[in-house]
Every structure is written in structure tokens, then in C-alpha cells.
Image (cartoon, rainbow over all chains, first blue to last red):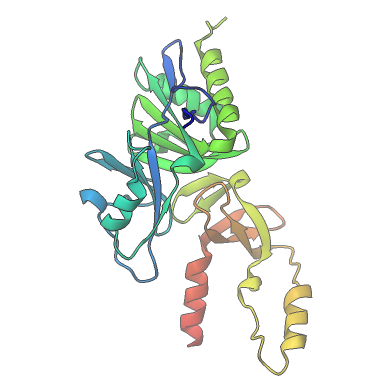
Length: 188
Length: 96
């Protein structure tokens, strides 16, 4: 029997992490993702006790989080459970809804600031065309980042998550790391 | 240019792709006796107004909803936006 070793989306043996100034980027290779869509006239479920967020919002409860992705559609997140069958659990928790496994379709990157929200806002200003005044903690949206479609989640004032296509994980990491490195350079 | 998305607020127009005249929502009945002539008009005939125009935009890098945007083609001023789903359902309810 071959001894097969799983690789992360960036092709490494373990999650990549890098720090530039006050910003730390970390690949979140353990995040399980599931998409949830309501069928016509079906009631809104409350999977694992989580009230699903409205348009443009993100909500978390216990170890589960959800972000709104479209009318009647959400993306459920389960940190640390990428190697379990989270889709089956979610399907059981959302009877009558369409539930689809998404974990390996995406790559998630977490950005953490050691100096409050200013560095996060500076990073957002360089990368995404979103109004940061309307993108406070608890909001999430899909938008374009260097011509790639990504989900951006403001998990907290000093934390931002970017979830993009797994096939473009390297490009997305390059965009994030280059921007973080430039922000860390001393201003002339 | 910003498009006032009905659910998400003002969003960059670069996130959207353009389809065309919102009259495309009114697809003719393919089983009617005059279907061929009706489809010829539906596919090929378009109004080309200089002024206020209702058109379909797709929020591709966003929530993937179709939006009916009312735009002035002379000034590029955007006068409003509503979900195409709501427009189509309202038209259906009005016809029934």
C-alpha cells in the first residue's frame, strides 16, 4: 500500500503561513465548506442552531459559520473539519434543502492583524473594490480580486478571510502576500 | 460607475456583465400559431433609445443575481435597479 500524503491547495505538506509587518497570512486548509440552497417555497433551516444571515452578512454560532452568497443561498463553514464528511452532517441538519460539498473546490486564507483594524482596511483598499465603511465585522460578500472571483469575510475587526478558487490558490496567495509585504515597507 | 444592487447596496459596475434590453424577459409563446414571426421580432428587433433604457445586468462577481437596471444611455446616469426575478414575477402576476 502506498503511503499517500495529502497536499494543501498551495502544494505544500502543511498550511503555509507568513508574516509581513503586523499582518499574518495563513492558509486555512482545514476549513470544510458546504453550499446550501433553498428549494422553491421551502422554509429556511437553522443548521446546528445557527440562524442563517441576511444579504451581505456572515454569522457564526459555536463551531459553525455561514455567509450569504445569493438569494436563498449560503455557504456553511466548519473550521477544522475538512477531512470529515461535513456535507453529510449538513444535509441531515437541513432537510429539504440542496446541500453540496465545496471543501476541495476552494482555498481559504486567513489574514490577521496584530495592530487593530487599520492594517486590514489598508489591505482591503489595495485589493477589493468594497466600501470598507460598510464592511464591518460580521459582513461577507463575493467580489473580484485581481480578476478572480472571491468570497471576502470580515470575521472580526482585526481578521479577514479570503476564499477563492482552489485552482487559483497560488495566484491568490501571491496577490495577498505581495500586497501585505508592500504595506509593511516603511513609508518614505 | 456604481450599480445600486437592491440587496447589497452600491457595487462596482465591473462586477456585472451586460446582457441587453430588459424586454428579453418577455419571451413569446413558442407554441402559438404566429411563433415564428414573434420569435423573429424577439431575437432581432430592439429599440435603441437615446435616453432612459431598462436593461438586464448579471452580478457575475457577486451574488449571481440578474438585475434590471434603468439607465440613461445619453448621460450614463443610473436611475434604479431591481431584481429581475421580482420584475418577472410581478409581470406574471399582472398578466394572470
